[in-house]
Image (cartoon, one colour):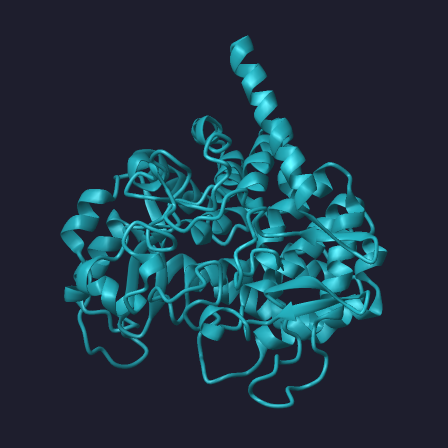
Length: 471
């Protein structure tokens, strides 16, 4: 890097760190999280909240820098917000849920935390991902701080078990995946992902891996057996039924419908006319592949969802071969998936009548905007982490260079619009914290790839799985 470029890079990082410091939320004199965006003054918006999913990249950064207190305080305070009793009625949060977000409120000079479990959010969708991200943050904290005693406290063990009870509960379902409604994850508006969206399955798998380590130290045999039973089933299900490459596409193309019984090949009764084979066959490189966005009864959502695929690499839900194929498709289809701002949350966008049906004519999710094909800089750190894990460092370097050339000048927007991410999002907040932390975390992971261990898991082998408290 040239001297002038290095100076500019250092100045941008310095600005980003200063903005991150300003975003820190304090409660009773203690730092407990970060607000969603510095530009949070508009009445009625919740960008002054600390969101669990948004805090993930902040937490990892603080852990890398040895600032364990912020993450520890966050984990303690969010755990206190977790309901431990059964619902009073259908409109109150269920036992074990972690809120989507919280904010500090002051009443008569007394501070308290106000949690939002989705009852105040747009469309009133209860988040599924908060519980899963919370466990992953706890695991990263223990991994970084070496403070296993923190997670072994009875209240934390109970918190993990309540989440696991929610996830592993018997229900009207016979798949190893989690059934969730539209809007229950990062894509928190209607976008046709009802059912078994990849993002939740990847998070579920990562949280199971983390919970298994954290619970086994306390010897909770029943929950651990439940996790051990679910992990291989979930892994096999995703690797087989969600995988799309040229070979698999040829198999799907020749599916017969209306099959019945144990010998059925087309187990989900997917109809050929529901898949745009010609476009997909042209788009798929010979050495590339990816995990589908959703699989269910007569449904194969062939959209590429970035978070689910990248996280599947990090937690080894995808096999080594599949992980390399996912990175290959990102490389080969760079203009579509990354373009001028890393990276697209999903590709392609749904348009025309499909847009009307999928989104309910959502004006924020117009084609190539927001969750419907918009570009989200926070995904930069996940792309970098996946590139590090698979040895595709040049892809991370290329993506970081693009982000560095624009983010500071554009005032760190929440998302970008357009087929290549050239436009600042129509309704994007400026100084979005996870845009800032996504950039900083990507830089830190490039400098210190060993910190990938905070968020990454190797291949799970039940027969040789460690039963010690050494994380």
